[in-house]
Each structure stands twice: as C-alpha cells, then as structure tokens.
Image (cartoon, rainbow, N blue to C red; front, side):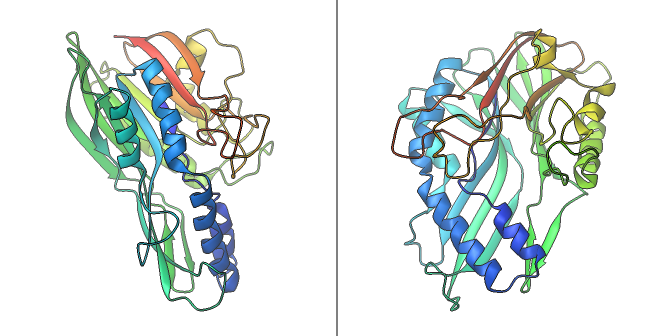
Length: 327
C-alpha cells in the first residue's frame, strides 16, 4: 500500500510567500497553515485510515507526509506526531505494524503569531518524513537492511533569514516472504513546477527520479523492486514527463499491469477537506515494480468520505492505493 496522510494544510502558501521574499505575508502564511492543520483533525482522519488498512492488511505500507507539529509553548491547537497517532489507531484495530525505515525528512522552525500580528514571540516546529511500515503479525514476513538517503536535488527557499528545505529523500527495506525477497522503496518526489495541463516538467523532480532509478538499479538486475509513494507525476503525462522516465525501461506500473484503463485518480481533495464532492483528478500515488514481480490486482482505497460531517469529510487529500503482487 501507499498512502499520503496529508500534512493537514496547504503549505504551498508558505512557499509562495517565501518566494516573495518573506515579510508579513510569510509570517501570516505560516500561522494560517498551522491553524488549518489543526482544523483538519488528524486523529479523526487517522482512525479512518486505520480502518482502511484493516480491510486491506497490506504487508508493507509506504506512508507520505508523516508530519509532526509543535508550537513553542506546547499548548497550541495542534501538537504531536502523526506516526504515533496512526500506530495507536492501528493497535486499537488489533493490528501491529512496525517502522521498518523512514526518511530523515524536513525539520523546520518557522516563526508565527496565532493572531496574525507582527510580534513573533513563538515558533512553529514542523517535521515531515516518509515512513515504511510492515505488518509484524504476518507469518513468514521478515525485513532487513533498512537504508535511507536524501536526494542531491532539492528545492530550497529562504525568507527572512529562515531556510525552508523539505529535504526530500527515500527509504528502503528488504522484505522476505515464503522464500522470496524484494526491495521495497518509499519516496515522495518534489512537486511539479508546471501547472496542470501544461507541457514540460520539473527539473528538480526529474533529477530526483533519475536518482531513484540509480538507487533501485544498484542491486542485481534480477532483484525484484517495488517503488511506492506519492510521486507527484500524473500517469497520463499532463503534469510532466517524470512518469514516462520511470516507466520507459525500468519500472512497470501495477495499475496498468492489472489491466486498468484510466481512472484511479488519487489527488487531491480541497485543503480543508470540506468539499462534499470528490475532487480527485490525478493519478500520482503509484506502485511501480521491477524484476520478477507479477501484478495480481490493483485498486484505489480511501476515495470516499469517511463521514457526512462535520469537516474533515475525507481521511486525506489523497486516496490510498493497494497492489497485490506475486514474486
């Protein structure tokens, strides 16, 4: 499975403000992001995501946007680690998943004022990483050789002396089951720089994809590899050509291999998760395979509202995606 948990807010407003060289706009954007993340109520969403995982019982999960939020005084409306919350919900559903590997990710401290005022006496602490979970109760499943790394290609912004580096990277682990082994890699590529429906691609995202291809191909040419995550590249090529790069010679898309024809959009609901009709229109959460891996089935999950109200109505701004493969 791959599932983007959603940070809880549209952080692009911070990056846009930072590109404008900061100032009060940047400070107000940081405060707005923190407040929106509190309003999208991850504990409720995590319970819904855990129920989805219970129905599917994936052997391994690539989680994206596993955030941790903290205010300086520890008394803000949003405090805590999404990973701890989700693991707790999984445990309540009778499942035991363990962290096999995770990326180093971003670790930012951004000044903000709850009221939007000019006095910046507080800071917002924000951590974001990708995490691989494995089912500890699946008989015969073992994992070993965890590895992670940061991409050489990164998007870095600076505003008012603060460096905004989301430090994207990758994590991997070797899974063995019933005498067979594969390498499971999780990543979250940089957002495409071009708007939807425009030709071209993101230079940074493409460079990261080239790094992933080198990493995935570093073992034996016959070694089965599964790459899972929010790759931020639409499978129909509307965003950029990164999907084509990944699937041209090395990776196979499980959605296509399962005989699907279009559909399967996984992104994105409205930032406040309050939209009553689904806004999913892009298939960017992908599970790709290489080597002796046969796709048996593939499906989208978590694409329906988990409640009728109040907001948030959706478990994430992304749907999840599950593939069943044979080694």
